[in-house]
Each structure stands twice: as C-alpha cells, then as structure tokens.
Amino acid sequence: MWQSLGRGLGGSAWRVTCGSSAWFVKTQTGALDLFNAEADGLKALMDCGAIRVPQVLGMGEHNAESFLVLEWLDLGLKNPVAAARLGKALAHQHQCQGAGFGWRHNNFLGATPQFNAYSDDWVKFLHDHRLGFQLRLASENGYRGVLQEQGVKLMARLPALFAGYTPRPSLLHGDLWSGNWGVLGSAEPVIFDPAVHYGDREADLAMTELFGGFPQEFYSAYNAMWPLDYGYRVRRDIYKLYHVLNHLNLFGDAYLKQVRGVMGTLLSACM
Image (cartoon, rainbow, N blue to C red; front, side):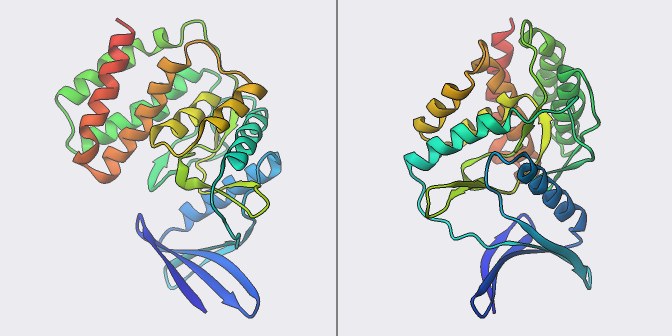
C-alpha cells in the first residue's frame, strides 16, 4: 500500500507498506543524480557513526520516474533530551574529518547543484563554490543591481572575516535545519536529507539558527563537547547567507530582503 506523505521541490514522499513491513520512498521525475547524492551522503554519515540516519535500501528508475527507498523510522515529538543528545552527537560527527574541503563528487542543496571540488583553502572554496556560485545564479535569475554590488564588496572582504581563524575540514550534514532532524521513541536523534561535504563545522551550527527549532539544550551540549571559536557570530552570518541566497534562487523575491539584510550586516562587520 502506498500512502502519500506530501510533495516538495518537485518530488513526492510515500509510506509504503507490505504486511507488517514499511519503507520510506521518495519519487521524482529524472532525479536519479539527486537521489544518488542523497544516498551517498546518508552512507557517509552512517559510516561516521556519530548520529543515527535512515538506512538506504535501494534506488533506481522506472519509466523516467526515479525512486529512493529508505528505512522507515517512527518519529516522535522532539524534546530537550533528544536535542541535547543531538548536540553532543553533532560535535562527534564534526570530528570525522577529511584531508581537504569539498567532497568526492558534486551533490545538491535542496534542488540546487552544489559543487564540491576539493580545496585546502576554506575561504577560496567558500568564495568559488558556495557564495560565488549562488551570487552568479542569482544574477542569472534576474537579481542584479544592489544585490550584486553588495556581493562584489563582500567577496573582496571575505578573507578579512576569517582573519585568525583556520577551520578544520569536518564532515557536515550541510542542510541541518529543524525539518531535517527527528527523534525516535528512545529519545535517540536522527538526521536525514543531507547535503554532505567537508567544511567548517560552524556552517552546520549556523544553519540550525537560521529558521529556529533547536533549543538551548542542543547548543549547550555541543559546546560542552567542542566549544565554538571566537568570532563565530560574524562567520555565522556568512553561512546563513549561503542558505538564504539558495532560498532566493529556489523560491524568489520573498527572500530578497533577508539576503540584503544579511549582506549589509556582514559588510558593516568588516568596515
């Protein structure tokens, strides 16, 4: 039996049952590359072993309709205990580190391509493959003028915002907003829908702050395991900018004011 769980960004989610067994299935036309990237990210997080993720059971394509089959997990209500466990586990996940910044192949942030060619220079990686790419995409989508002027100024000042700070290439979830974590009945946290790469651990933390949904217990537990470095509050806005630019490119004008606001804050910080 196929039970619809709704649609999002061009695809559909389903609970598929057969007898007493159940699976979580995603379907989308022509999305095999996207599902391959998601499966690869989930396997990487599973191999790290810090946080529970749904097991990938299969994927494929039938008549141009791509599908991804995952373990079905019964999720309950989020609570402070689970949030604290997630914070502690995320600090452990960030200790799974790579030789450089990037990933073994390109993947996606939502429906947007995310380019991951390895670099040993985080600021250059951020310039070329994160903010620079999103700004170019915004220009192609018609967002020019003031937005691009702000972008040019910010990109020129990016190294100054990282003065005295050298991040390690940590394994990141990459899209850790409140909708991409849940909790099992045992209060064990689980994460899903990743945009995995090796990057600055602060990028994951910044995303948790962008749309809310993470209580103070989460941050306290993380900092107890691995305290954040001085200057995080400024760098946090750089990472927020990447995501709000992506939302602007995916969803349009509703995010333009927020993008300009974050850019203005960053430019003021490096005057």
